[in-house]
Each structure stands twice: as structure tokens, then as C-alpha cells.
Length: 276
Image (cartoon, rainbow, N blue to C red; front, top):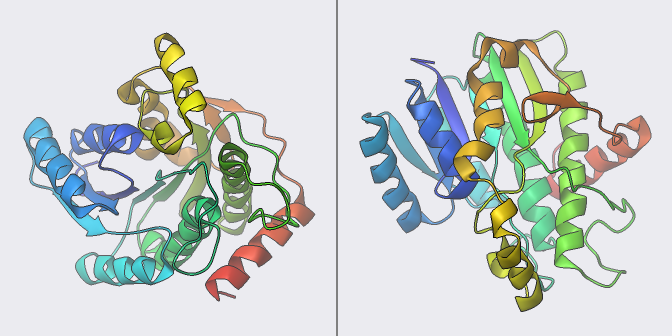
């Protein structure tokens, strides 16, 4: 991985930080795309020390804000001529319905629209690499996506249901992307990192946080959860595979492959980002 450039969203904590740390130790150049500059700098300094490298930098990025995404891509392209690995890792959910700066429901904006726009804008840099990989972090608990109401405007809002639906959309976007990239030097896969000890539930209501507390013995470490993403990003096998969903490095069947539903989802994302 020496000389390879890896951009990881949400790399300042949890699963993203573990992925960044492991890839930094392979000799790759790491770009930590993070929303919170202060927390990102602390994580960056620590990763540089642990991996004994200065090839780690911070890219300011708020995936819920399309202006921030475009600024981040412009900055990245000014600093790098190509991109070898894109790990769309950042994810979040809230118990109450919120709206992004662009007027989109916040869970949908952060987990779906933002990564969609970021990936689309970075495709030229990915194609400029001899072999590039897109690694999308989803979940085994994905489901419940209603393409007629993706922002919960008509239904009663549930933060966890919004998150599960968004993770279904992430898988669907991956299959569409992989098909479009077929025959090129870029592969695209999705994965579930497992049930990990992270701060993803920090915005959950008290009852859900209590459930997370009770299930701590069942939760794996972010480092263990990162193994599949690191494998897809760096191994020869990971570069030879595309259009698949992985759990513990094993390809797993995914039901969310309906072409009509994927086309509808892509149209929604195009409209939300003014891309065609």
C-alpha cells in the first residue's frame, strides 16, 4: 500500500479511526475526512504516533452539507492527482427528525445523499488510479426503505428506522455503482462491520442507550470490526472483487438489488444533489 492514497470519512473515531490506523500501518497515505476539526486533529496526532508516519492528513468534510462536500473535493483534487481507496464510513442518526443545511432530513443527508455526492465527484480521481476501490460501510440490519417517503415527511419519524433505511440505500447505491464501473479499474463493494463498541448510539434516547449498555458483552472492538474494510481496501483479493456485500470477509447474499428500485433511488439522489 506504499504510495496508495486512502480517503476515509468519519476517521476520527470508532470504526473509521480503526480503519485509518490499520491502513496507515500498511504504508498508505491517509486522508481523514472529518466534520469536527478538533477531534480530527487529536485523532490524527495519535495515529501518526501509533503508525510512526507523517503520511496522515485531515480533510474538513461535513457530509450533511453539500457545499462542504464540494469544498472538500476541490481541496483533495488540488492536493492529489488520484485516489486509490475511498471508504465511505461516516454514519449517524438522531432520535428526533432534523434537517440538513440543504433542507434534507439529516439521517438521509448524512448517510445517503452526502456519500453519493462525494463518490460521484471523486470518480475522476478514482479512475486516475491504476486500480481503485470503493468500500461502502452498511449494516446487516438494513431495511425498511420507502422510496416514496425517504425523508419521513409523511410517516411518524423514527431515528433508528431512518438509519436502517439509509443503510439499505447504501447497499443499493453500491450495486448500481459497481455495475456502472464494470470493466473499469474501479471496484465497489459494501460491508457490515458487525456490532461494535462505538459512539454511534450517542444521540439515541435513554431506553436505547440502556439496551446498548446491556449488550456491551456482545459488542466487538472497532479494530476487530475494521478487519473487513481493511481487507477490501488493501488485499489482492479485495481488489479482484466487486458488486458484493461482505460480513467478516465473506460474501453474503443481499436482497436489495431490484433494478427499478435502484433507478428510483439514483434519481432521488441526482435530484437532491443537482447531478445528472
